[in-house]
Structure formats: C-alpha cells, structure tokens
Length: 394
Image: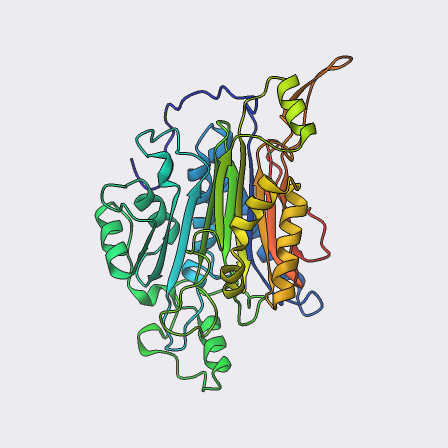
C-alpha cells in the first residue's frame, strides 16, 4: 500500500456511531491582524483551509480511516507555502529548516489490525529532507518492527522513511523568499542577497503570509465511521529557533494526543449509558498550535483528555480552560479537538415520542490570541472556516 490512502475493503462499523464522521483542522495560531490583512490574503488562507478539509473529507466520505484523512488534510497544507509546515516552513537561527510532525490514534486503524493497541502514536523531529512529514509519521507508525519507538529524529527517521516509500527532497525545496526575509529581518541581518542555491522559487508564495515571525503549526483531527479518532500535527517550528530545538509538535501529550477509554463519567452519563445500552468508549483527539514551549510545560493536549475523563468536563470547557492556562503562564496559541460521543452522551438515544435522534459530534477550537486558521467539515460535506478570534465559521 502506498503512503496515501487507497480505497480498500475495511471492516463495517458496528458501534452506535455508525455513519458519523468529522474533520477539524488548524493552520497555525498567532498574532495576525485583521485590520492589517487584505481581502486577497484572507481569501487565500480560506481557500487553503477548504482544500485541506475537502481532501480529508474525501477519505472519510468513502469510509476511509481517520488516520488517512488527517494525512490527506495536513499534506495539503504542507504543500501550501502560506502555512508554517513543509514548503512554507520557517527558518532557524542558522538559516535552515528543521521540520517536526506527529501522529496519534485513539485505537489501531482497522486497515492494519496487526498494529498493537499500545503503539498509540509517534513523533519525529529535526527533519531536513522529507517533503511531507505527515507521510513520514504515518509510514513509521505503521512499521512497528522497523521503528518500535515513540519518538525518532534526524537522518535515521528520514532514511527509514525513504526505505518505506516516503519522498525525500533537497533541503532547498523548503525555501520561500518571504520566510527567508522574515528570518533575516528578525535577526537584524541584511535580507539580500538571497542564498545562492535558491535565488528563485519554483512556486513563489502568491501573497505575503498574514502571520509574521510565526510560532504555529498545521494540524488535523478526524473521526471515522468505525469510531477511531486520529490527530496529526506538522510544523517548521518557531521562527529563528535555536538550532536543534524540539517543540511540542512531536512531544506526545504536549502538542498532540488521542485516546479512548470506557465511559465512567458522571452519574447522569452512567445512567444514560446503562439505560440505552451503549458500550461505546469515549474517544478524544487534540492538536495544538502556538508557543510550543508552554504546551510542553503544561502537557496541554493530554491535560484536555484528563479534564474530560476525570473532571467530567465537556470538551468545550476542557479545551477552553487548557488554553486559558497557557495564557496565564505567558503562552499564546489554540487547540482543535474532537470527541465521538457529544460530551459523553451516547450518540443514538431513544426518545419515546419521536423515535431516534442523534447528539452532535463535539468539535472545539478555542484560542487565546488574535487569530487561528481553522475549519471543520461534517457529514454534509460543507467546509466551514475562520481566521480571526471574533470570526464566525462560514
């Protein structure tokens, strides 16, 4: 099987969430200004977000895996120079691109039943040659014999990925003129001449990015019809980061998380579960973006899940409080998160007078800064996006 999803025969869903799927994405959070933006800039970002949503939706609509949906969505953003990942990655203090990515699943993918449940996920860091880090983490996650670890870095990860069919490129591929000038300006250095080997771009950035000196990432969280949630995050890191710096994106529990557990919530949730005979576990997935050092210090992504599991908070409350904690400590950013049970209530509930009705999938996208590129697409196939903090999804 290739790196990207191929149509295949997968086990049919048997849980109460049959037929339910959704995808939520982010393209980074930071200090972008609405007043300083132009209509063409806003349109370009929204177009990029919609393309990512539609790529992931195509997988989910046809019954594909959440894992493959998030790869499809994120790789679309990695190929778009507007976003700080892949082709649009920022530079470190030495003028180099060091990429990071991660993938985590709430349970093993149905297409690969040989993957042990304890596998959980994998992060990679200090990548300099892999064109799409999202493809790399998928390939390594699906190869537990070759890579039995949860975290890998550098040339070793890329060489193993290449042996598994992942495309490597010359490091000059990641150059974009705007990010280069931003890097030099941030260090107080002359912006010209441009590096000799990359004096022109094959695919120049169509417009200047909205975010200046970004710290953000791109990410996606998807739920498929078999109840699996996958979270994938990819980034170029912080602008002018120290060489060798590792952020929250590949750090499990900090910038990404996905898991499921048996529902043992509040007494109301337990009664509802027994009353309507739902044995479906609770599943949650989280991807973060922003000042990664604070996500690491607060274990932000895993904390969201712990709040939902042990404090019985709704996903909206858990993510909002986690993002507020970041700001209290001095970190800006946001998270996207998705659950499978509508705040712990089984999806299909018997209503005596009206038959069956469904509880909406819970999607959360809180932020504590001026903006976060974000979007969601559900079963109706309508992509909805937003950029600034006060934007309504449309």
